[in-house]
Image 1 (cartoon, rainbow, N blue to C red):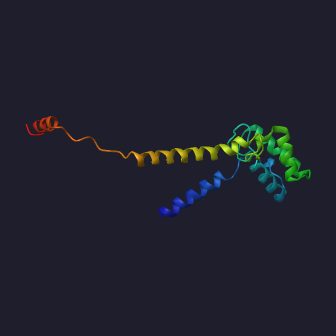
Image 2 (image 1 turned 60 degrees about the horizontal axis):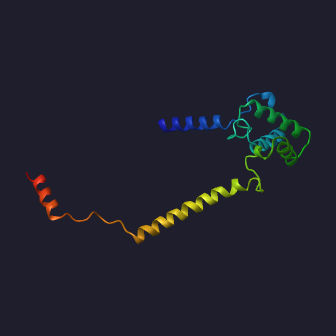
Image 3 (image 1 turned 120 degrees about the horizontal axis):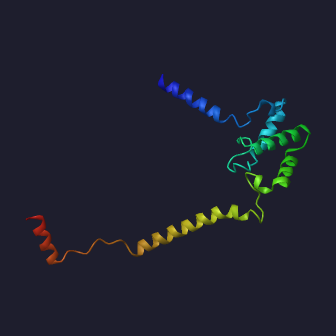
Length: 155
């Protein structure tokens, strides 16, 4: 019983979170195929206010305006490529959630690979150093230290 209740609550939470940010029914297109296209395009574009969300997931006013422009262009018969190209021309490559690989964005694509290589290199050198110089225990106690320890432990 409890498990079914928890499952139902989890389902409702997931359904509510995936509803998207389109809060105004007037924003939606009446043609479901066109609406699906507009949502797909919107999922590839970054909200310039939130910067971590697509415009379809954002509640920012600018995201709402961009969603409106996308839907107007879908209704006008523009292709997905034309709509995305228009947005890039208007807002720059930053609007793309997955920027293309070019000289300006190369550092974005290469930095994770370089960081991973650097981390693996440091780990390799540390393991190599540890093999050469294994950790040794403390030196044995001298006779005077051993006598002092005996007096401390056995008063």
